[in-house]
Image (cartoon, rainbow, N blue to C red; front, side):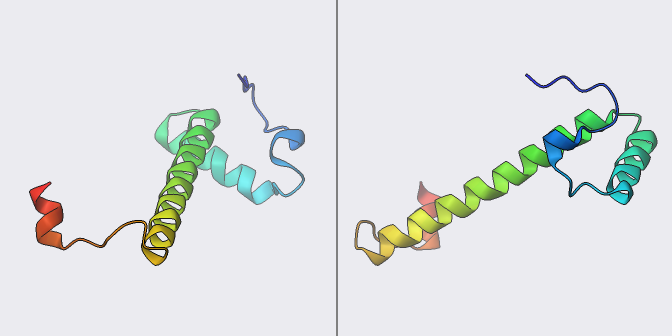
Length: 80
């Protein structure tokens, strides 16, 4: 588990983290009264959810293209 104690270490996010990003993160942390670590964690979770959704969509499309699954109508989907 990564423990966060202040400034974001370059080895964690790489050299791409510019001062403006750090300043924006500090500003949002101050406005929300939450830590920078909290916002970093939330951003990572949101990103992972997006990637998982994209992966699921790609696999579903591939399965449809290969005939491994059939499309269903909205009415069929709503019925469960």
